[in-house]
Length: 597
Image (tube, rainbow, N blue to C red):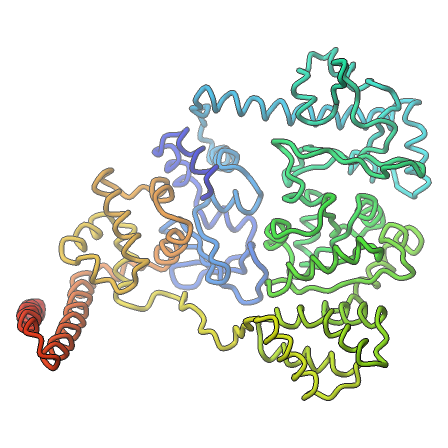
């Protein structure tokens, strides 16, 4: 659960939250979005948060938990809806409360929190109203006819205009400001949203004038900002809303609210540069297209797409800025879980031009021919440099080596170097030598994930895992365990922190409340906790005494071994403190005898 969710959870009684969770069977909630099959006591399906073919998403109905052994997504029914549908904690809680016909009281907000929420509400309302203002100007007034004619000439249907709620900003000094002022909307709201500006004389004027307007919406479909485009050759061609408290351009993708279903169905996202690239594609039936907002691709964009898409196709303009943006995106997407391909638009056209001239099906066929990043980078470099001489060959290597060096697999690096050698007319040994020199000169540390052992985050198999899977859901088992086992008996340090926090919580509250647990554990600890809880089995309960004894004996024997080695080393060194170590060995041996009875 994120910080926002934790904060919002404090506005409701934990008992109510638990009541809502209990009233919504998690299997029923998840089944509305994921096909589940029962296997043992749990239900399994393909994870909705990452793309997979083999089901690794487990739902434990008795525990009210889900856990993915692939991407480690975990939580309860509330978190499931938050993550899947981009809801806030309160929105997810309301959804489940309505589903179970449980009345939800108004959140208990402090005056400061209530004022902040009210302010944000007004910002969203004003943004939506501005969108309606621009849209009505375009579709219902003579002022907007020039804009409507412009869009129709570009082949946009009325349905597309309505879907994207396209608009027109009239060519007046303060038409929007006066309209909003008459409605009593506070000037500070308009200023914060950058819908208006204030000159040195204290006069307000509209920020957008005589432009086609593109509402920018967040993942929930709320208008948060605007882009404006001129209809002639004047500059700037595009004018975008500066960032505000409800708009961070690096964290949003234009049209994601309209494209995410298609992206999820096709497991592919086509990333373009401009508003019209997106809209033209959607207008011609290619609806898995989104765009970054005046910025290059960012890691936050990846976080938005990671749970929807398996593949990202970069379809940027092939001008200087587009090539730079593609190179930057390739760098950020390298070694991620995405399959990445790059589409070099033919004849210098942008996607908007191509789709309008050739249609949506032709664009899809073009996308199917997109190439791997290495092939794209190599092709771009070969166009720039003459490889008939050594200088040209070295220039191509300088362009491509950084990408190859960042490949996290030795085998794939070797294959990439062999690919590079062919158009340069170099044998493999020569290209490998050049690459070794490059790595040595740049002091680059190469990575090989194939030789890195994967973390063992599979089903719980050990005695500690079996015991903790019960203790984490049953306070009495936890208390019984802690009365016999010191924290040091658990070999995994990460377990010790979770045990200590949950035991402190249990002593304080007298129970293990799920909401409280989420508030005290870090995200990494919560992942471990969720994995163990999902895989717990009531059959382990009869094993609790035996599990405690086995864990204790294992720990004592390890301690005995360590002190014995220390005593031997001290004795050989002539250090008389070896006697103290022998005494400790004797004490531990006595404990081993007692626990072995």
